[in-house]
Image 1: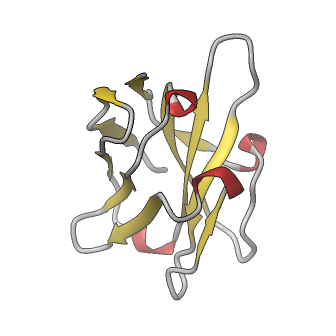
Image 2 (image 1 turned 45 degrees about the vertical axis):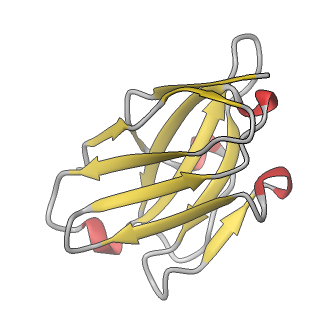
Length: 124
């Protein structure tokens, strides 16, 4: 069982930066793949980025490549999402998620553990 708590959201102007953090409980954090998803009202939850437990391989939504960076610190049981050059279309509630497995997954229903979400608002 993993419990996740996100932080770091807020209001920022277009072109600005934010760093989201996701703190995980449990001793097996290092064995979980971690993902960030986002959701706006009326739309489905969308994959943003993921990082594997093994070798910390990373994967990104095309529209955030080169602007967002996912990383993890297994000693601190924390995964991060550094978001640079933010755009108004990045506005959403951002969720951290965890799953165990051997193959990266991009759909929300593949992740059994979720945080409560943190709001990111980018003004134009």
